[in-house]
Length: 91
Picture 1 (tube, one colour):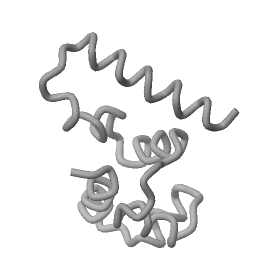
Picture 2 (cartoon, rainbow, N blue to C red):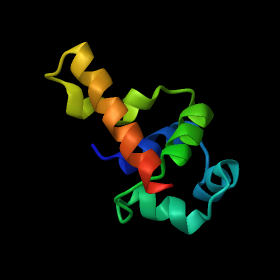
Picture 3 (cartoon, rainbow, N blue to C red):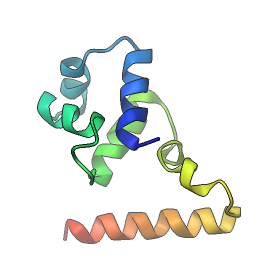
């Protein structure tokens, strides 16, 4: 399941409209629409952080599907790699 689908499911579970969530996150509604429809393939780490705070979920909620057969150490390394990669994109 894509990150966008998970975000949409969380939004709908909270009975929030796209414009309402977009406002809470400080992004345009069209940006949120593109994320939810998987038109946008890359999502800013800081935006994922804001989404985690709004929905009170951990970061791994969005990537755990990819981690099913990995050990805890593998998961930590993978998350660190993702964070470093995203950080470098903003330098």
